[in-house]
Image (cartoon, rainbow, N blue to C red):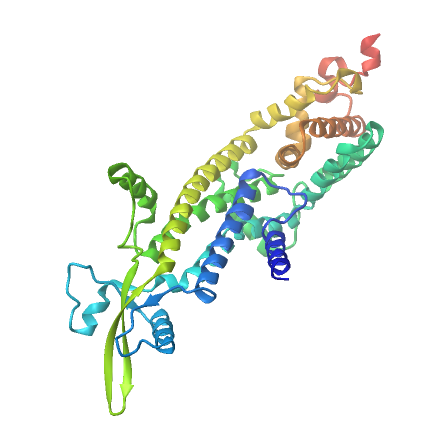
Length: 420
């Protein structure tokens, strides 16, 4: 029964932390709101179990209070009251107010602190989830519909991807400029447009701005956590890991008795009839042994996430804010399409028109999300359907004397005619 109960707890924890399903983000995002969130939540639960189920503290009782009940009382009292640390080569100060200069007490809040850090990784995910609703398109649904075609027959796959392309076309035609009567949303969007100065007031880039803002939040979250942990532990957490590495390199070991004291002193009072006796008990903080290792692991995780988020933010800025990179992305996948399967020829000018005038920044972003969460084969098939939808749009809406229709002697040539 106990094993079954533990199994249910683990399953429930996994279900909450590692949610399954189609996503509309990339690996770096999932490292933040899945992996880091899960690890910190695990740290919080582990510390909480040690505090409330195990024995986080053992105190040395006075000789006259050796009974188990007295020991338990002293342990509980010292756990919930502030303790202090005095170096072994120093005498305990007689004035009580001088004893608490090096007070020890952060460990009591460790469970809440780890859980707080965990939920900080969910904030950018929440912002992305709420703000993308105003874009007029369900990116997650587009990715999911594309992913569903992985095991379909070719004919069914083309039909479903054709539906996806039609949906994208309707969105591009209707919602690309994000019209809204919501004054607050307009102000928020304007603020984010001003934040990304390099983007200015261009249109059809709402999703791009929101996603890059979320990427920035993930990066800022890691930086802020370094400062928060430094304040919580009352040390410079930025150099915490490097100090440990230097200690191992110098003496081959690392024990931090200053920031994570194993032994602390606790003053408690016992009322005896008409007088009150003050006792000082020496306590072993076994919990600090675990906290020391947890914060060391956390430092390396934060250092890795800082690098990963910085790289991801820079990469997405470069790929989404550069027209050349957006065009190269579409060119890459149109070049992988078998020539016999294209209804119309693809030229450099037509691709530029497709990217700059039809898909624009948000349209390319949606296709990049499909690429990030599916396979190259599915991305190629979807872009082929988008191209076919685009050429139909051009035939119906562009006059014959436009630059697009004049390309390559009337760019929209049928493959059959070319073969002849």
